[in-house]
Length: 193
Image (cartoon, rainbow, N blue to C red; front, side, top):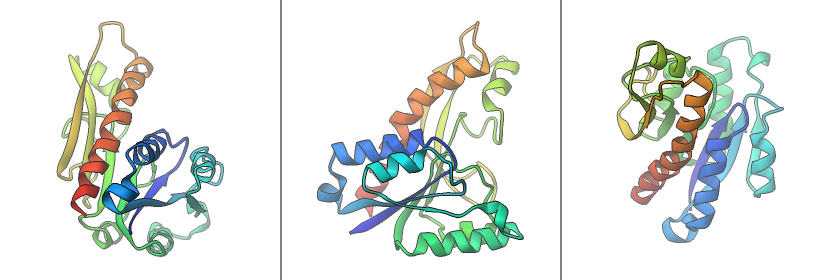
């Protein structure tokens, strides 16, 4: 059995979309892959409740209790490595990871970003797209590299920017697409594991 570990910091809607797809499509039986654990840097992350309700192991490592980013990432890698992951999926994990962590999981660490990369790396992507006058925005699933939001693109979805859009309305439409393409990208990767 090949394991997936998902990292979250909040509600975990993308994690939930992946879990539901994995269950509906029976990834364990079809591909020999299971979602082994959900790990969060926040004890109150609502996504942990969903994971537990679906029989998935959970763990919490509060980044605030570590003296450095490197110390946190080392402990995080230790927690993840207990599950011998074939794939580590960032699903709203709101931490910039150290180069050592990224290198440790090179080729098996993916993320989702709410823009059509390479446009609008970093934060506030929806407002930045509106402010730039973009006619289209979207979402990208990519491999994680040491440089923020520039890894190889695995999947994308386009969403129109409407004349009356706010950052919130655009974000809601993009999120709908996130829930479609992230499970699809993970499925495509697990088929090759």
